Length: 276
Image 1 (tube, one colour):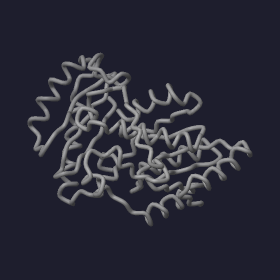
Image 2 (spheres, rainbow, N blue to C red):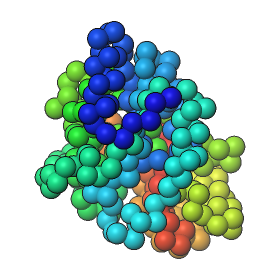
Image 3 (cartoon, helix red, strand yellow):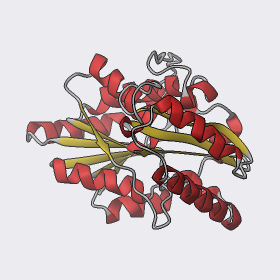
Image 4 (cartoon, helix red, strand yellow):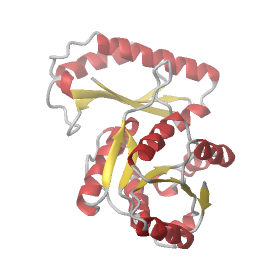
C-alpha cells in the first residue's frame, strides 16, 4: 500500500493509473476507520481496478474548534486498517496541501434547514468545499459514501450531478453491530455506560418501527414519533422524525420513508437513519 501526503506525487501515480486505463474508486474519510469504512472499501475494490482512500479531518465542516480538536484520530491503526483491507493508495494531505490558503467556501443549496443542516449551520458547506478539492485532484471514476449520513449522501448526489457529471456516486448500506447500532467514529468516544444506554435506545426505536403501520401517512407517523420520544430518557435531542426517502419531505407513506434521529450522550452527538 502506498501512502502519499502531497498532491504532486499523487498526480504522478494517478497519471500512471489512467494511462493503464484503470478504473479508480475513491473512498473519502476523516480517519478513525471502522467496519463501516471497510464496507465502502470492499465495494470499491469489487467495482474498480484501484481503490484510493483519503484521510483528512476537515476543519471547515466542524461547528466548533472543540469538536474539531476532539475528533478521534488514530493514524497507526488507520494505516493498518487500510493495509489489511488491501487499499492500493492512501492519501493523507495536510490542510495547507488541500486548501493552499484558499479561503473560498462553497454554499450548499440542497436540503437546507432540515435535519443536520438545521442544527449544524455551515456544516454541509464545508463538506462540499473539501469534496470539490478532492474530486478535482483525484478524478476517480466512482466515489463511495455510506447511507448512515443520509442527508449528506443526498446533498453530495445533487452536487455531483451539477458539477461532476462523469463521476458516479455509489451509496453503500449502513454497516451495523450485532446490537443494531451503526458503526461510527464517534462511538469510540462513548463510555461503557453511554454505549449501553445508546444500544438500549436504538433497540427501542427498532421495536417502535416494527409496531408502526406502514400505510400511515408520514405526518401521522411523526405524531406517533413525538409520543414515543417523550417517553425515552434522552439527555438532548436535535430531531426524531420520519421523512420521505427520496426528497426528505414529510410527504408520502411510512413505507416510503426513513426515520432520522440525532441524540446526545454527554457532548457526543449520535445520528442514524433507518429505512422503513
